[in-house]
Length: 297
Image (tube, rainbow, N blue to C red; front, side):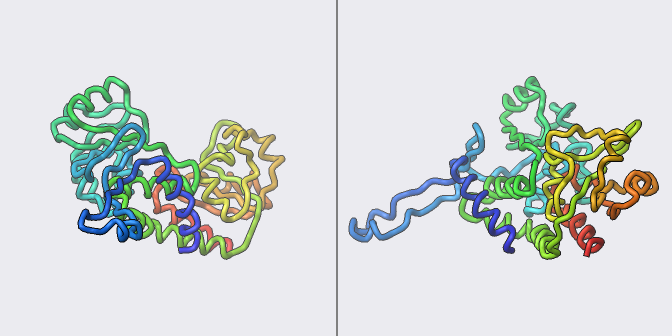
């Protein structure tokens, strides 16, 4: 797991600096003062703190209002902690049998409160009035920003592992959950290619929607080269702008007609991708990376 090991060394150090993860206690009083100086501090798994929330124990009852976070909870072996999920959560299949809790924009507040969750997790903001009602009912709310990079996705797995497994055992859990993605990224990196590309994520009148360099998908696919669209470029590209681009590769959503893409980029290698994997960022983007690797060998 070479790629993850390098990223983890940086992300874990940053996470431990930003979060109050666990606390140390002195060695047992029966140990002499001379021996005490030779013993490392004993680390406790809790408390763990994120932003303004401090958790003294692992939350047992959780509501997820994000399809991506529901999937990540399952990846981390925590699916049984979920007592409700958003109306849009459809993976894993078992999510269909869970109580539905609406969405961040329109949560079923009464329904959520009736379940007495310890924690509500979301990737989208919840209205302040709804936040107040949830907190008054004793539920904590943790808003986790969507990742903007491959490292950012790893960090989400690390933070949730730390929250639910404590500051002692979290790393092994997170690494295990990300091992498939790490293998996919490593295999792609071993191709040793560095080619220019664009990412067509959708169609618009008179042009295409091209992901720019600041997008999460661009960070992941950069293992194959570099995005010709700069981070500051607008997503909409007109036909005149498309004509000026000459990428080596066009990654395009499989919902766009291939003939449309080949017409705009007649000299580029065309690689269809399941763009939904990027819209719901989880370790399952390994499927996209592996598919691209097979086509670009």
